[in-house]
Amino acid sequence: MAFTLPPLPYATNALEPHISRRTMEFHHGKHHANYVNTLNGLIEGKHYEKLPLEDIVRETAGKPEERAIFNNAAQAWNHTFFWQCMQPAGGGEPRGEIAKGLREEFGSYSDFRRKFIETAVSRFGSGWAWLVLRKGKLAVISTPDASNPLPSGETPLLTCDVWEHAYYLDYQNGRKAFVEAFLDHLVDWDHVAKQLIEAGTQLERAPRRAGAGGR
Ligand code: MN3
Image (cartoon, rainbow, N blue to C red; front, top):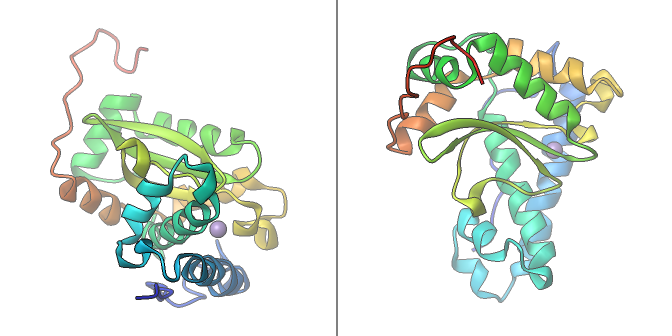
C-alpha cells in the first residue's frame, strides 16, 4: 500500500501573513509530496510497504544502505507532524499541563521561547527544531537534515522546519524572524498537549530548587 500525501489541516492561505500561500503551495504541494512519492518508489516490493511510516523511520535509522528510504520516510513524517503543529491565530504562551511543564523545565515560557529560537537558529544547514518528551521531562533539541527524535525513543511534541525552503520565500535568510513568527502566531498548543496525553506520561515534577530557573 502506497503512502499518500495527507491534506493540509487548513487552507494554503490560512497561515498568512506569517507563512504565505505561495510557501505552503511549494512546501506541501512540491516538497512534502516529493518525499512521499520518492518513498513509495524506494519501498516498492520491499517489506517496508507493510509498515507504518514511524516503523520505517525507526528501522532504517542509522543504516547507511537504507539512507534514502530513511531520509524520505522521516521527511514525510516530519512534514505531516509540522503541519499539525500549526494553526491560524495560534502561538503565544500555552495553558495547562504543558505550560506548567515549560515553566518547571525552562524557568518560564519566555526562557523556553528563547531556548527554542536559539536552538533553531544555531542548527547549521538544514534540519528541525523540536520540543520533545525525554524520560518524563521536556527538552528542546534540533536534528540535522531529515533526522527526527523517533529512533532515540523521545516523544516529539512540537517541531519547526528550519530548512530554507520553509521560510526563504517569506523571510529570505531571516530564519530567526520565521521561528519567532512560528512561536508567537502559529503554534497549536492543543496539538502539543494531545501528544503529551497520548504518550501517557505524566510530566515528572522537577525537585524544588532554590531560585526558580536556576541551572
Ligand atoms: Mn520542509
